[in-house]
Image 1 (cartoon, rainbow, N blue to C red):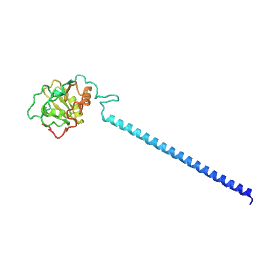
Image 2: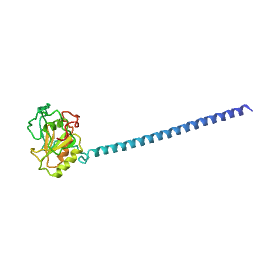
Image 3: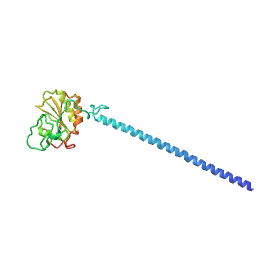
Amino acid sequence: MSFDRRTRIEQMRSADRARDRRNRVLVIGVSALAVAGLVTFGTYTILDKSDASASSMSGDSKAAKGSDQKDGDDLSSGPIEGEKSWDAKKLGRNHVEEDVKYPMKPPVGGDHNPVWMNCDGEVYEKAIPDVNAVHALEHGSVWVTYTDDAPASDVDKLAGRVSKTPYSLMSPYKDQAGAIMLTAWGKQLTVDGADDPRVAQFFAHYVQGPQTPEPGAACTGGLDAP
């Protein structure tokens, strides 16, 4: 074999090796692109599902607020027409064993019995003691009261709302000024009926609202129906 022939053979082998290297590089590059594409697609799919799940949870959360609140509404903000307010700092909060003469009916706060009225959505068919109900207000409850002048249909609707709302209670109240009244600590409102939109506003504002002297305190384990 001549020197020139050996040289040509070596050149051919070198070209083959170079071509093999190029092919390997090309295969690796294509594989890398494919993997990157799969990762991107998988990430997009996960994010897309995550967004859908978040959207679904948001919808569930809105539904949990009930039919009172529509998109764009915030019932817990803004003034409530006709609402009366008292200076919370001037309302006593002492625990007393005797009866208390309150300056308003129903009372919106003041000294009260050490035992609260159960207020975990309780609907009482008979009048309850003021001194125990005031303690429930201190814990952040809304107290719905009504007289014999309130239509039975309104009483039933309000009872349905209260029974589904922790930190609320309802009872008849003989000597109050309006047929239907809503009371929280330092707050009170007379409404026209169960469908009055201010009912939903009052609940949104004051069930465990910012007026609550003892937020998170128990509404069970107190005094039950008298």
